[in-house]
Picture 1 (cartoon, rainbow over the protein chains, first blue to last red):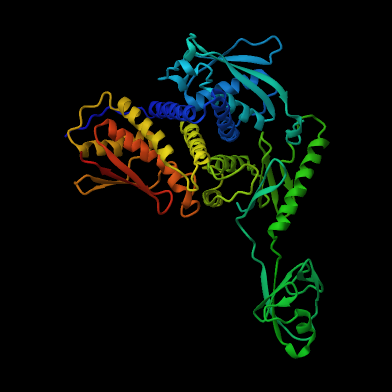
Picture 2: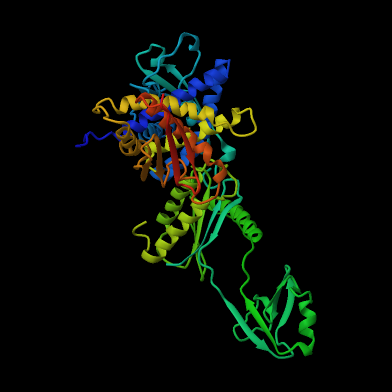
Length: 178
Length: 217
Length: 155
């Protein structure tokens, strides 16, 4: 019998599977922990473990040089979102001291099919991103912190992730780069 | 192009990986009559030639076996002390095998931890800030190429002296590290690398480089 | 490894590590992991077969699993599908994606079950939503090759 020739889009399927798996993970965590804050922390920790390894893959593939100012970093983070998740966030809302910026997502790949139930309003659903960014930047001797200012899951129009530069980890800088 | 070995040093300065791809095998076995013309001493738990080199046996060569019996330290595997055996003229003629000493793992770890501060000094000597650190260390018998990642991990390749820049090779090794070591869930950062897949792929990469050069990797 | 797969690979590792740490028994409990896979398989098959014509019979569904489904998720088709035509199917994947970065041969063999549980659940969930209730188990003798046993439960 003739086979349907519609090819499944591998990239799209990969992304959807990632979203579904992440969702199943969050559901599992919500069952395991009574306290929503613990779930948030666990997501961040997992993200951190991913970030410290992901950074080397990113550096090896893109051959990026070191960032000497935060705008540079913002561009690289944008590139990473594009490379690994296939999304194109916008960089904007720079603070006056150029040490804080926002990434604006038209659609957050993690929350594509998700609706937050009422008792989970404190849940930082995409907290894994915060962990990934913290881990990745720490490996290149930068301490950053990030949080969601707006979240489409909570009714806002867009999802806004704000990233702030805390300090350079001077002790950990590889020799020659100081 | 011959690649001798690959070393990876973690960001805290410890050797986490070393691989000898090509080991130059220099072994000389000859029969000698009493008395021996070279002076042997026990140094660093090995019996080595300290003076009197001849016939391809040079100072620094290690005594590997006597009449086919190998030795540990200065004791032969059959229990006798090698110096006593060689003093006694009744044991001659005797067949001795000498070779170049192979570096033990401990020695390699020691050398790698010496390299780390050397690298630091070199960077600080730089007249301009933000130096890349040692990229090439050159001697008459080999060239050591070094690449430090932004995360502080150093990849080093010891190869035969050549003018070809080995950046591409170092970058490919970095990619293999990202693929087979970091994506192995059982590997913890900063620990010695014991991933068979990484070893296999590295060996394949080096064999490819030897056969067809750097163009295709 | 293609970039879009890297993140999923790491996420999978974290989930396995999390389920191991939560396991109260001494032996690693893979049932939680399997359930996560089940939930994903159940949902993703819906999205994948949206525009697909109806499957005529069970074997066609299995074939779909081995070709399009497997290649869109694991970047390769299943190497071999065997069946006794009485509800038992065996899928052979000689280079299973989640094992291929871990080792080739026997290193880490004892941890292999944790890395295939999610997929067992995925298969079970996908087939469940297609109307087939089954039990899925996996066997790994030599990494990265893996065999998935599907036993269809007739109601």
